[in-house]
Image (tube, rainbow, N blue to C red; front, side, top):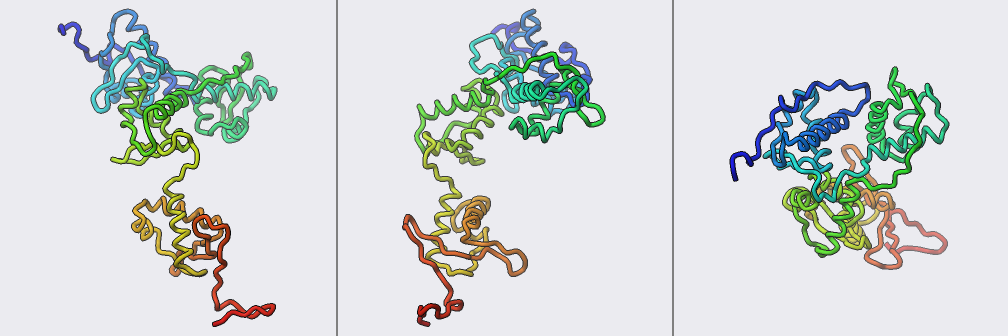
Length: 356
């Protein structure tokens, strides 16, 4: 490779970044991402930069744009998902030609979906210029979108000049729009669907998936996008994730009859109570149970919470507190259960007597 074809380090000076000014509530990530995307596309077209040229560090860009390194990190992820950057963990971030075969271009984001949902709410409820918008919390309830996403969308609508923030109140500035009924998937949902198909075609239940970094390279998106997509699949019961060496494991490709660790522990605890306890018996501590069953304390706590909801145990605080049995569950798949009653509380009733 000739010296002229080697990737070079782009300097902050030639990018001509400046300290951006932000309106109250304006989303910094969106504004800087738009600027960076425009700069990369323009510079690639003019031949000023080439694919594989290296961007300045996050710290340098953060300083010269007047934001935090965390904000620049989010910007890099956004532009990476857009197809113009590639991030090598702990090494560099380099320019990528986004006009190639990139099937994972940024689709409708959660922010865009939320923005359209808010516009639709304004339009359908007859808002006029000068009207005050309801609170972010109420907007979230009305639209079924999280307050955090609504807050980001509000920042975008402020940038568009549709609303403004004044004395902690959001005021409608213009209503010259018609809401778009967006039904497109977000990028995370699209990648989750791709991973689901990939798992179905290539993996069996119990097999471990490649690391998130490898999946990010395979699907041509950021590691953060892969992480969020796997969280969706874990919520659907397709994958099970654990930190460290355990990684991500396929637990159910058809999403039927899945049994999580806490459900297995719950079954073991049911059997333990049925075989070894009376009403009023005190169970071992969560730490002891976690050690005995070789699982985390969190898993045991979730199993115990389920048993408490069903009325089999109760929790008591204080010096003499603990977890106490209040009813005896059935074992296995029996169609009935024995009612365990302490002899101390039984009296002869209606001709029924119990031998002591």
